[in-house]
Amino acid sequence: MASSPLTVHLEQYEGPLDLLLDLIRKQEIDIWDIPIARITAQYLDYMQQAAEMDIELSGEFVLMAATLIHIKSRLLLPRDPELDRISPEEDPRRELVERLLERERFRNAAEMLHEKRLIEESLWSNPQLSAFLSEEDGPGLEATIFDLVATFQAVLERARSRPTYQVNHENITVAAMIEYLKSALAGRPKGETVPARELFEAQRSLRSMICLFLAILELVKIQAIVLVQKAAFGEIALKRHKRFEEALAADAAPVIEKDYH
Image (cartoon, rainbow, N blue to C red; front, side, top):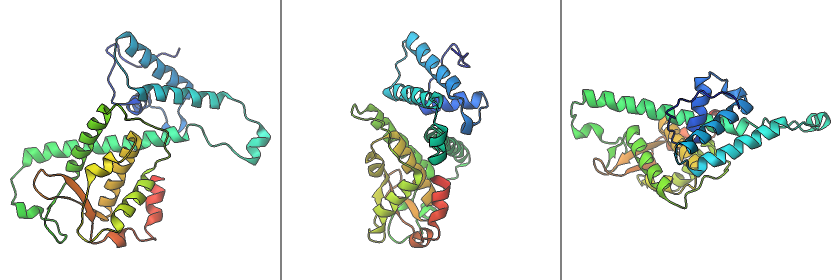
């Protein structure tokens, strides 16, 4: 078995994607050309060390181990050159790479927002409440992205404690979640809000929750939606920005698809 870069104390990870990202980044591996045999060996070595130290790993780690072994077997299985000419096979690692990149984007965003919060707490000057009034009509306070992250983290904690919570092989992308949000908000009256918590809890997997979170960030960035609270420290909700239709016009959609397909 290949040597592992893991320490004797065995680092803890929230999920298998974080473990894989750590293995890839520590060894400066090109994420688009992952040496599956080596990474699989190191991943299984981590699981073995965890078992020896009586560290309980969730079913997500076992599922990822099976996925890695399956990808490795597909890469080792010879392909008929004639069949490749007629119908070239997609790289078996592609779906895993896309999931890793999505996870890394979310992790980087969370770290950036955490640093932003620490800076804001150090420089907090207690501005008047009116400074936070939403530019949209109707009552409500404008919420920050950090408030959304806090809501998302709380939902994740509840989801992990549910015995029925499962992570499935779903073909979910950020682009698909953007379409989901467009449908959820398009038919609502002006000013009506949708609780972010309800949207997150309606998802069936961690992957879909992360894609939904990234989709919300994208729609906030392009000024298609606004994050609001009815009261300070209240529940975070989404509502349409006054530029909702303009931001999501047909000529803008391909840009979103290209970035997050």
